[in-house]
Amino acid sequence: MTKELYGIIGDPVEHSLSPVMHNAAFDELSMDALYVAFRVPQEEVADAIRGAKSLGIRGLNVTIPLKEKAFSVVDTEEVAKRIGAINTIDFHSGSPVGYNTDGLGALQVLKETVGVIETRNVLILGAGGAARAISFYLDSEGANVTLANRTKERAAVLASKLRNANSIGLGAELKRHIQDSDIIINTTSVGMHPKEDATLVTADLMHSDLVVFDIVYNPMETKLLREAKKAGVNMIIDGVKMLVYQGAASFNIWTGREPPVETMEKAVRDALVL
Ligand code: ATR
Image (cartoon, rainbow, N blue to C red; front, top):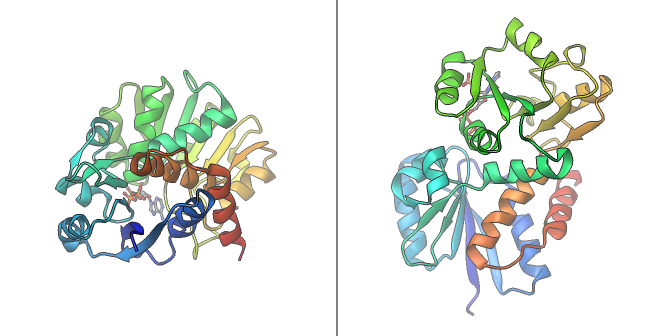
């Protein structure tokens, strides 16, 4: 009866695939561990984290909309400090320590598919929490980052914190910019279930040498990715791999073990087609 307990806090959280993914990893490694989803309102984040520590929970993921709030109530490692948000809490040193593995997950996906990121022109759609984590890593890798956001001011603030980034709005500027881009990453919720027919970029604006990466994984093939197919783009990346890689990085922080990423990816893809 010494099952190790892990979990995710968010609101809403019932559709999260992290339980399916991490429990598949525990099974694969024959670990006596369980991962559960906990719905936690914003104002109770600090209590929930304190309670998790008291209950002996080994690790937590943090998801929308709690990543910034959780950041403000725990100690964090350096990268998370620069990003200003966390998606992972580790309890094994006694007091909780926050990490952000979102950007690392995205960077790993891109390195695996695109190779070298340095000097590539990367257009990031959005300037929220996910954009902050991803742009931090891409900027550190030496990419030329452009942030395109509905609220242009928010993109400008984020760009000013990076080494080599600029900001634009979503109108005509965006159209022009796509022509010079090598990689487009959608970090907004546009296209996510249930509003599956929405996209910020359509086929007529794309060129076939682009890499188009959507971090939305539900549906796996978003409207943005369907438009990319229509435009003849041959490097199209859905959001599942990023979910898996950020989760794998959390798993490694908590357990010190090599995460079974293929098993984790299969569990997520199977759950999404159900
Ligand atoms: P997350 O932590 O998931 O990134 P967030 O911080 O709320 O969530 O950021 C959501 C991002 O999606 C923002 O860039 C938001 O644009 P604004 O800054 O203008 O709000 C973007 N977004 C959400 N819905 C959008 C829509 N319908 N059209 C364009 N952008 C949208």
